[in-house]
Structures are given as structure tokens and as C-alpha cells.
Image (cartoon, rainbow, N blue to C red; front, top):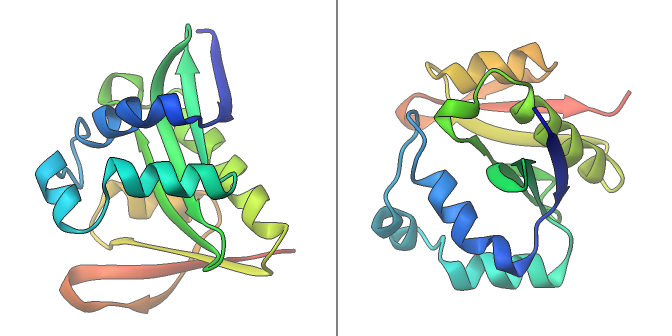
Length: 145
């Protein structure tokens, strides 16, 4: 498999939404994303202001992405199309996001559903659960060594 991880561009916004709305776990429709403020315009503005998103491509086709909130020190999203799970793309997307955040923060964080597969994924990457949140979510943190 010819896979690369690269910085996201404005031309990737449609692919980002296609990937985000295609996942099996933590699925949200485009309408649901818009309701919580995740709009193409918001993503466009974020990508335009600073490097904050990475795309995993296989044979020049976007199949996954990660996105961070630089100021907050937060991994905002990591998603891979279901048919490309298990090939290390999510891990590589996380490594890019973590490395960028650790240039600015000693401790970074993310939140996910405690009962999700993502929770186990983050634990395997060295993230530590630090707080249970309402509605079954959990906050993870990772410290710069």
C-alpha cells in the first residue's frame, strides 16, 4: 500500500467531511456536524490560519485525517475510512498531531467515549485516562517526556 501523511489543504475539505461521515464508530452526519459548529467554513478557516490537520492518502486518495486545536493543546479528531482501518494510518496521523502539539505544549489532551474502540487505541499509544466526563466520555492526557 502506497500511503503518505501530509498537511491538509483547503481542497481537502470535502474529503475530510466524507471521511468523518463514513466512520462506523462515533458517526455523525453532515447535518449533525453543522449543528455543533463543524462546518466547511470553520474547517477552512482553521486550515488557513495554521497547520492543524493532516491527511492520510493511499494511492493519492484521502482515506483518513487528524485535526488539532493548537491553542488548547487538544487532538480534536482522528478518523480513518473503515476499509483502511488496521494499516497504521490512524497511528501515523496521531504521531503527526502529537508532534506538532508537543512543540507548543508539555501536556496535550483529547476526549472520547470511554467504551469506544478509540479509547483502547489511545491507551495503546500511551495516552493516560485522567478524568471521567458526563455521558460516558473520558479525558486522556499525554505528557512530553
